[in-house]
Length: 344
Image 1 (cartoon, helix red, strand yellow):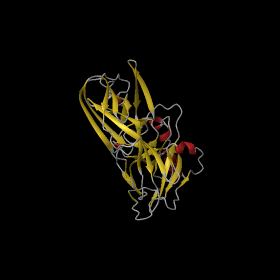
Image 2 (cartoon, rainbow, N blue to C red):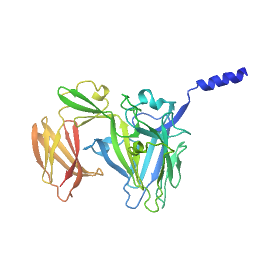
Image 3 (spheres, helix red, strand yellow):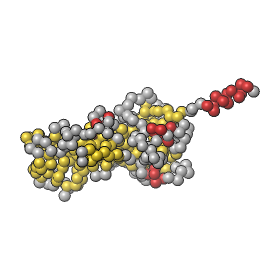
Image 4 (cartoon, rainbow, N blue to C red):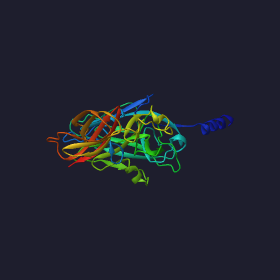
């Protein structure tokens, strides 16, 4: 009886860990798994919809996408780092954040306080090349895929800006703001990218299972879709300061520190049409402007040398470039600003 009693005490005092998957980012993986989905080949449109830092503010894909997700128009690869979290860890302490997010489920249950849901992907039938590497249980990848996630509801009163520094999660971005010397500087602890998965078109059987959880609208703000799938992904490691993209090694290390005059001197876009691109320069120097379509393909590069501070109307040859949505990126003196615009 004494031995049995001791065993019960040990079991009840143990802190059990649960395996989850976070998207590979800037931090190293002790254990990594890979899931590859062969999506629609014919007229496939899998890929990035809009890399953005806030609604209406977009930047080129090469600046944002970490190595946790790679895609072409006909396939997508997810690379996850496996973490072991203690019971209730995602809803307490530094993992507790004021917005909803989701992680990959890699255990027989989700951590306490989080909720399991499943997305069934009906992937490419002809010449299917789905595959996985590592222990992905309970996820199933064969000719189709059942992917399981743990949904972490927003925690009221939480102050942490990101639950897994150095990695990526499925979430919408979270923004904080500081005011320095009369100038409002927005500090983003995450970078947001929207991915579109073009699942099989013919006889599509995509589906969802929420296992009785009622907050479907919260989940659908992160991962949603019918015959295809849209995913919102946030990564740690970049900040956005008045149009400047910089790494965490700068003012992001100490967001409370005043921004330098150089950081406030980013060039800005003032106008865009078929004949000219108007830019407002805060300092003198050469200016490089690129125009890219929504898929990230650069359709024009313009260089102007020796410009002085002020607004400049820079002429460009739009040629046969059609009307539509574009991303204009301006580089000057090591600073970068980018904006989503519509060419009419």
